[in-house]
Image (cartoon, rainbow, N blue to C red):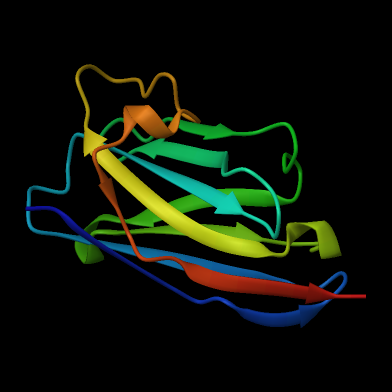
Length: 128
């Protein structure tokens, strides 16, 4: 059973940075799609980024492109979401999700229904 644990959330001021971690366990780390989603107050959950843990392909949503980046540490089975130039509208609970990949792409990367496993989330609060 795949388990995902997010960490790294916190409170920052506008323009600050945070790095979120998604630790993957319970199955082989390679050949998975790992996505990052967020849900702000009164908003629907939206996908912001995804990566294929084996192929290394990444997907960054237009809403955060240029500010958010993905990386991974295969030895630690961990995917990182680096968030820079944070804005108050980035305030949300951030979740990572995963599914077994078939092929070298993760598509559709921002669809909740695409993923089988979810973490509990980590809160990010950006103050003005």
